[in-house]
Image 1 (cartoon, rainbow, N blue to C red):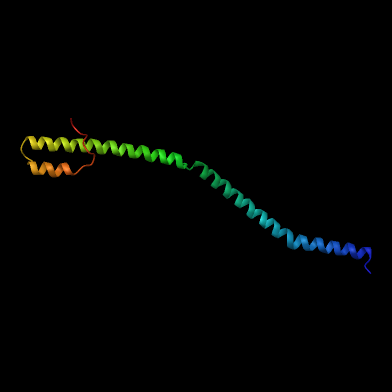
Image 2: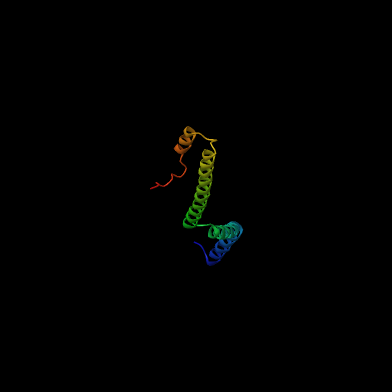
Length: 111
């Protein structure tokens, strides 16, 4: 049967095994976890600075509006140029009809 000294030696051996084998592994895991926590904190900071969907949608809508305004101005210039060239008899009626078929922005009906 085991005596009290045997139990103490077994306890000491168990402590030694834990100190030599288990604790170093736990310390390495702890170091890796700390590194992962730092990386997650960095990612959280980056994600927090990303624009959200509503912001991007608004910016795209603004950009689309700006592009449409520019296109309308260009369309007005082209239409004015076509009228001027027709008045000066540079463009013929067939040319005007052909150009009128190409509508970027349809002209409003004139009454």
